[in-house]
Image 1: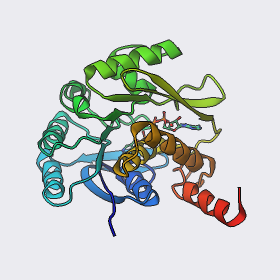
Image 2: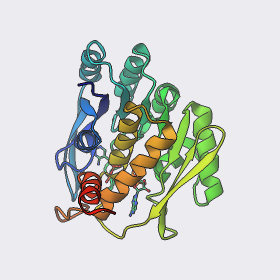
Image 3: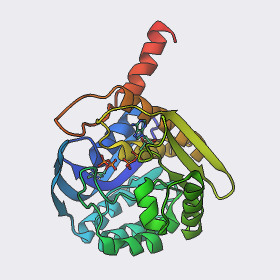
Length: 274
Ligand SMILES: Nc1ncnc2c1ncn2[C@@H]1O[C@H](COP(=O)(O)OP(=O)(O)O)[C@@H](O)[C@H]1O
Ligand SMILES: Cc1ncc(COP(=O)(O)OP(=O)(O)O)c(N)n1
């Protein structure tokens, strides 16, 4: 049986809601064979990040090389990369293997405020990694850091998207989870020519830990399956919406989303009709 393969280059979340755990669960649910290169171990739960233990850049590169030499991923995503040495090593490997379906989730700060990327690494991300991306998926604070713009209005989002496209991202997805101004969670995609809005009902819940990781992993799975960027984003938006709506209520802080929800709904539709 032929299966499409996706690689996540990201940190471990011991609590299982974000990072490499969220990515692999998402790949699995979307029928894609998941592989991983670990960049850091975090001691983390729904209350926040208690500790961060980065891997050496050498260890990260070794994992990617093992995959590159044998298992040719159909799509790749990056999450927490922590420092400039890791970003530069990852960028060199992606360029060396000529991987094109690359989704960059420029993870910077966890919900509880812990730093998952050193400030000095931001210039490396812009110089080496972003130009290799098929899609970059910043949330609003990340887009502000990467562009130096303040984002308050829809026009600000468009200006930020254009600026990130100018840096070299082929497609820019500015996620709207942090814009609490309306009743919707609206994400904006720019492909260098047109803007597309992806809108869903905003769910009132504290259980949104790992939404960004899960969303970008779902886009990656779609690209691995051969979908266009537009179709991959459309599918990922449905996946994350179901995962937030059917939240699991685990832990006492920001709980994880429900990676089963999307498939469970599809199954229920088949059994009971829509
Ligand atoms: N409360 C919510 N209700 C519905 N969708 C949400 C909610 N919060 C975030 N999302 C969606 O989850 C995805 C991740 O967005 P966001 O939370 O901004 O990322 P991050 O976790 O990187 O901060 C986006 O598609 C966004 O619209
Ligand atoms: C190991 C690890 N990687 C990434 C994140 C950030 O995940 P994100 O999807 O942005 O969700 P929140 O942390 O904002 O809930 C993480 N926490 N840990």
